[in-house]
Length: 355
Image (cartoon, rainbow, N blue to C red; front, side, top):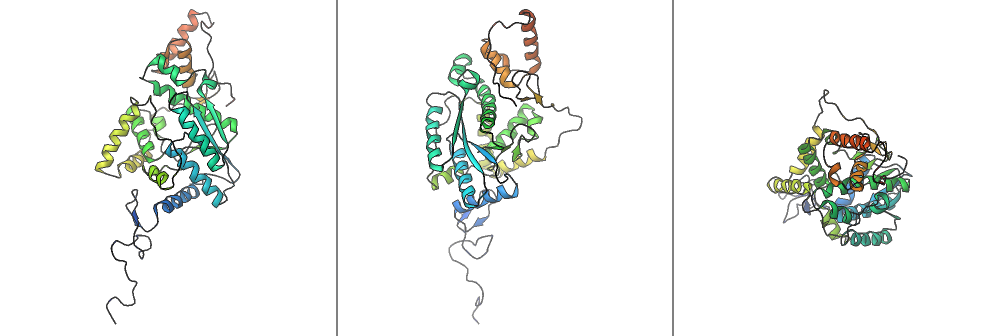
């Protein structure tokens, strides 16, 4: 018998798939470095089917809002969830939820992309705006405070705006397109800020289960490959960066992590693993969750961060909300004594929705 006769002939010109060990590998997975025969798009699609099933992210009949900004991450998320829901009969009611921060030349253009996605994927769209919720746009805030700390306002307002929009849609869950790169940046930022409360939960695939609406991150384990998927599938997305973000603190963390990734590709996943493995000392006092006395939103302080920032804007003191809570409490107490309990400037509350 000839040498090798009776055994499967190995394909020439490449390595075998590490899963079946018979077919020639078509690509190398950046997350595990496995060489597999699947096409990139099929592997990406199948891996997220497993993520949803293995983590029990959804239940049949749930209403789910997809945070849609028009960027590649949220566009890929809307496409994948819509396709999986149709192919595998998840029985989900999906909605697109967008936030209009009021950034001329950026958000108005990206919202046009989201409106096209609404038609392309057949998903209802709900848009909530800073102007309606808070009485301010980011353009107006930047004119008042400048390009330093402006991302603090936007991040706090947007997070609450998503929750308020989700409440208006009466959904059971809110999903966002945060990927492994985003989560690694958040882990690093929480360490740099000493924010152990957020550090303990930022790596979870589902967060906010003790709040009004849980949030899910189906792309938690994805390295920065969403652009490639959007490119191959020819998805319609908006790719311009925010005009107010060049000086954002997160940007420096992003550059640092990218430098690490060039040296060691698994650095991003290792940072996330480190965040998951952190254990908080039993002697550490953790903030207790409550509700804002002013708007009812979930907060560990008397006033939620959005109300504090909004109060500063309405009083012409935008930096009042940038700093330690103790200082802010003293400012509010001092103002109350000076005005004998009356407001010198009429302020707009950050919302009236019941949380």
